[in-house]
Length: 137
Image (cartoon, one colour):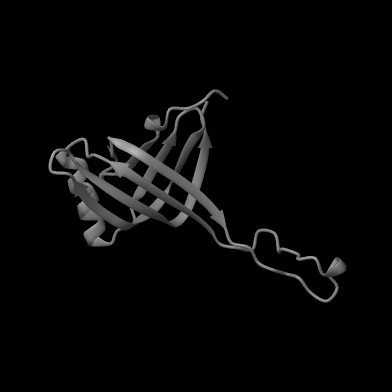
C-alpha cells in the first residue's frame, strides 16, 4: 500500500435524519483501537508466564481531531450533540484502508484561535457501542 495523505481522513457525523455531516478542515486526526486484557495467569501457568483470556477484554475506539469547521452546519451539529450528551453514528473514513462506523460520544470539544489566524476546534470521540469495519474496495 502506498503512502496516504493524512488530510484525506474524514470524520462524518449522522445528521439525525439519515444523512451525514462532514467535519471538514481536519488538520490532524488519530484513530486508536484498544482491547482490554484479562489476566488468566494461575499456579499452573508454564514457568509463571502471564496468560491472557482471549476475547474477554472490553474493546474501545478513540478518535481525536483538530482543524477548522467547513461551515456553520458542522459546527452547530457538533455543539448540539455535545450539549445533548448524544452518541450518534459516525463514519471514520481512511482512504484506501476502510471505514469504521459506530456510535461515539463527544468526550471533549474545544475551540481556540490566534488573533491573526482562523478559529480552530479540537474534538475527542469515545466509542459508545459496537464499532464495525469495512475494508476499502
